[in-house]
Image 1 (cartoon, helix red, strand yellow):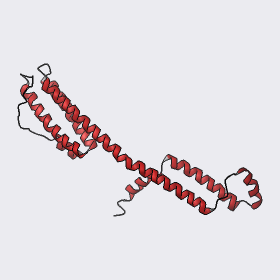
Image 2: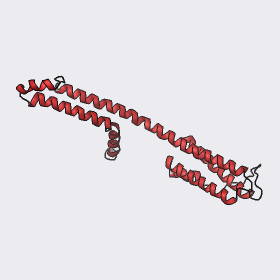
Image 3: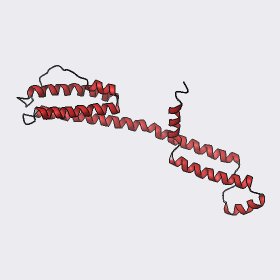
Image 4: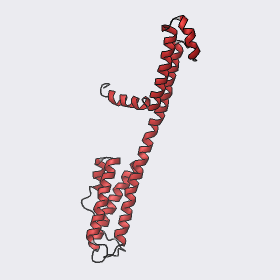
Length: 196
C-alpha cells in the first residue's frame, strides 16, 4: 500500500517545500554555511585572521547551522501547508461560480423562450437550447464529473406540461417541450449545485 501512495506524497511535499523562495533561501544558507565550514575546518589558522576581516558572520558551530537549517525547513513547510490547505477552497468556489453561471444562463434561456413569440424561430430556439446543453455538459464535466454531466443532461423524455402564459402560438408545442426539458435539466443541475 505504501508503494501506491509514494508519488502523490512526493508531489505534495514538493508543492509544500520546493518553491522559488525556498530555493533562494537554501542557496544563501548553503553558501554561508559552506563558507563558515571552509573558514573553520579547511583554512589554516594563519589565514583565518585575514579571512575574518572580510567575512563578517559570527563563528557558528555545526549544531547551530543544523538548527537554523531545520528551522527554515519547518517554516517553509508550515507556509506551504497553509497555501495548500487554502487551494481547495478556491477550487470549490470557482466550481460553484461556474455551475451557478450555467444555471443562471439556463434560467435566462428559459425566460427568453417563455416570453418569445413567432419572431424567435424554432431553429433559433433549438440552437440556443443545444448551445446551453453543450455548456452544461462541459461545465459539469470539468467541475464535477462526467457521471454528473450525464445525469444532468441525460433526460430523454419529460412529462408534457402546459406552461400557461407563453406568447408563442404556432411554435407553442416545440417551445413548450423545450421549456419542459430545460426545467428538468435545471432541476438536476440544482441538485449538483447543492453538493458543491
